[in-house]
Image (tube, rainbow, N blue to C red; front, side, top):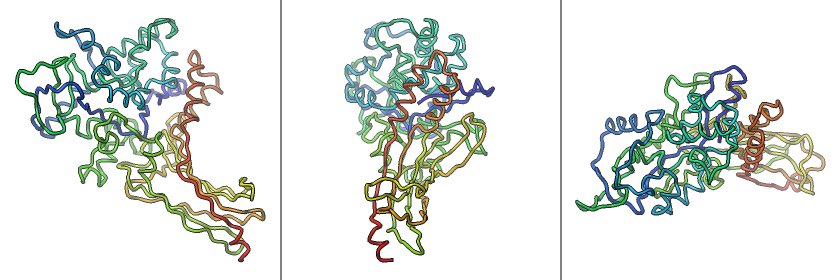
Length: 428
């Protein structure tokens, strides 16, 4: 997860925010394990939800200001660890999520090369990856400390990514969804940090559009917004059926936001069906259908990942035979500088791609293999390599190397099937 700001700058382009929070819809809903005081549980109209969200996500966010005099240091803390005092389940889920890793080595490896005074440029990435004003200030302070090399006690606030307070706190007032049962506390109940303001917006798909949807005048390629996940969902049957983002990405209000980096999540989103291999006139043929059956947006939705469909023949030792490999890429392929579209083979909801394998039968072929490989960070893998190979990583080189290592480690096999060919070949 990173923003290719350095890439854009060195190529003479205006920086474009293409930060990945991976497949990709995220929506913060508070489970309210310990705090039950709600200021307002009345249903909101669509217009009032839109009004709330425009104010809630007006960037750059304002500082929290002065806390209530009776608040303890724990209640005024913006660190996720403070929230874990009562909301331990939510914290543990968040800690394992991509949101907690939103300011990883890929993005920090670029920001460390920027001037501490370039706060507008910082916002190109941290507006979503670390949106609090206090996180922006924390980043500036880190860059001023010899580009972040100063010692400190524990991670700085900006390094902790999309923290709880980024979605749930404004002006030291907590906000969250209504209780699951719609009830409210009895009048006069005193609860920690002045309870919470109940907002239906936290259960609305538009909440995540603040980071997962470009505005209509945003950056586009070939007439398509670079980040268009909310609109993809809105045009799908999932929106018509009332199945919002959080129903898949935050089931039971869990703060996990699983997406393209999670094999089980990806498996649940697509259906793959292979036809039996056939041999005729010395040619091997077979097909693999990939249908978007459970993803409420394009598969994949963004330029970051790619899915590689492969078919090849193996010998008896299960080694790929040279010259038999055939591939098809599913994804939105763009140039490294984001200036042009190379191909867009993403699969819309309920649509299918049919991969047809047809190659000469190799004399040593024993089996045909279908494999589907997911590369969640494919764009960044190429981007990091480009920075390193061209000597553009600067002070951030160690972090960029780590980011490349992490991106490669995130790859996984989604589907694998081996079908014997020996019997088929002998019968021909």
